[in-house]
Amino acid sequence: MTVIEQRPPSEQSPVADHLRVVRIKVRRYDPEVDPDANWQTFEVPVEKSDRLIDALHQIKWYQDGSLSFRRSCGHGVCGSDAMRVNGVNRLACKVLVKDLGDEILVEPIKGLPVLKDLIVDMEPFFAAFRAVQPFLVNSGREPTRERLQTAEQRERFDDTTKCIMCAACTTSCPIFWNDEAYFGPQAIVAAHRFIFDSRDEGADERLEILNDKEGVWRCRTTFNCTDACPRGIEITKAIQEVKRALIFRRR
Amino acid sequence: MTTIGVSADAPSRPVIEAPRSRRPSARRTGTNFEMYAWIFMRMSGLLLVFLVLGHLFIMLLLDDGVQRINFGFVAGRWASPFWRTWDLAQLWLAQLHGTNGLRVIINDYAERDGTRFWLKMLLYTSSFLVLLLGTLVIFTFDPEISG
Ligand code: HEM
Ligand code: FES
Image (cartoon, rainbow over all chains, first blue to last red; front, top):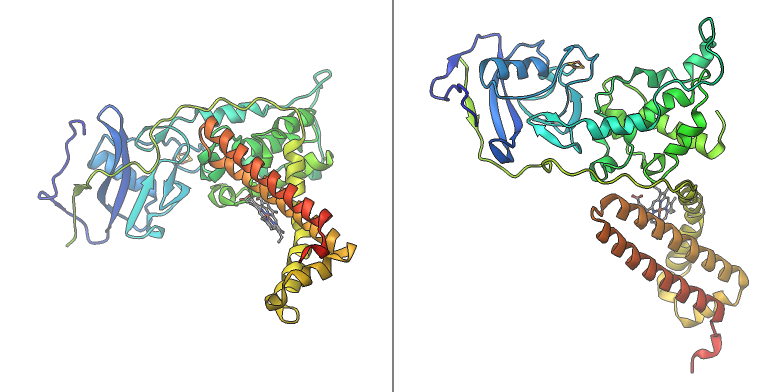
């Protein structure tokens, strides 16, 4: 590892009585140091109310500054800190350490190239997102007032507007693990958000994009994405709705 | 009092492969093939529930079950066009259903294009042979063949 100050186990420090010590086993990877990934276990004192992100900060700030992970808002809004925790994708800022047991396994999200430690290259994920045209497609003149829609029309795609693009769903999908060319659940969610928007006119084009070899028909309904979504979006259902729209070509 | 410290575990093989190259994205085919394949899996599956379960019930459970099956038994059933049609439909649906299922699995798991190609060739060849042989037998079955 790089030259970082690491406290050797012999020089252990005392821990306040109200704290609990958990073992956090992190999959470390730094190609500049070692071409292979390896596991490193940290013992971290945590409060009852600590989230996993707090424990990771504890490591980074007090034990090993070389530990790398993304986070920004720290409150489940920006979607930066999706990671594989005890085998399932979670936002480190939304999951409480007390719910994770005494030994916590932390890995980068799976299926995207790992750059360093918990940081992955998100580009393939963003490329799939861009490919479904995730923006309002509308012909004709710019209206002089808002584009109105009824509460029911808004409700139709409400669920899929909640996406924060953390990639927890796409990187929980076994099809995506094996084949990065698959659009993945997030891109389908992004398409769904516009396909079922009454103000949008690009539905046919998006449906056609998702009708192809790497599109919705690769989905095998494993529900991993729905379980992984930190926003509780019913992703598998949204994917099925896109399939149905393709079969019946009606909205 | 509890204590904390850092311990590095013995390096183990990575669980997730290190950075990999991006597979070229698939060409747009512009057809509805995958959609029809998806619908076919559901439709054939529905029919297979009746055909296969009915078949298993007749062959394995009814009367003496599997003990009574011999050349004469098959000849007796196939004297009726109903059972020939049943078996023909079952053969084609199960064969196409299973072949498409395996095609999908190969698409999922074969990483190199060469592997993909040869596995599919093997799949299509073997399933074509089974389909051909089965259909031939159903249409040309001769009850007088036994000497
Ligand atoms: C009992 C009636 C059956 C029903 C209702 C049924 C239904 C289905 C459905 C709906 C799928 C698609 C799964 C998906 O896309 O996620 C499927 C896949 C598959 N089926 Fe069947 N099937 C039946 C019988 C059979 C038989 C007799 C065979 C073998 C000849 C077979 C072999 C396969 C294979 C290999 C797959 C692909 C598995 C996968 O996608 O992971 N099925 N089946
Ligand atoms: S840090 Fe922003 S979603 Fe967790």
